[in-house]
Length: 109
Image (cartoon, rainbow, N blue to C red; front, side, top):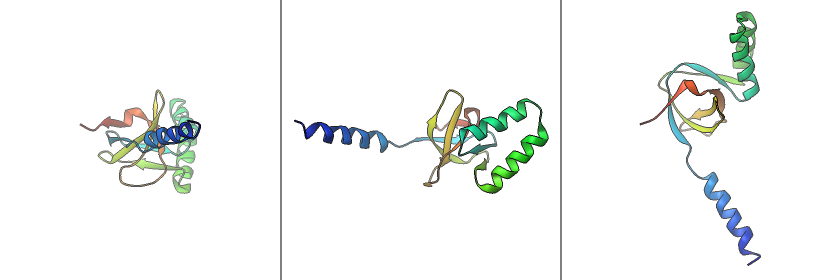
């Protein structure tokens, strides 16, 4: 029995991890960043009306690969989510996901 419990636990974790992520379609063009904190900081700059700060941080983040732009119609997978953000990756890649507001996506039907 002792050996069975770790095996069952490993099987349960594997089953949970191998579950496919939800297929989504980008509804609105947005940017997303690997770090949820960078995405949040960018949106706070927008809300504060700091266009210069927003532009500088976004351009630097895009150039470094920390962030990317999503175009309307792109197919993505939703890997994780919070109440307001989702971590999206292009559907047929193994790329790391990018955090963006959930308003950027719509559930594929």
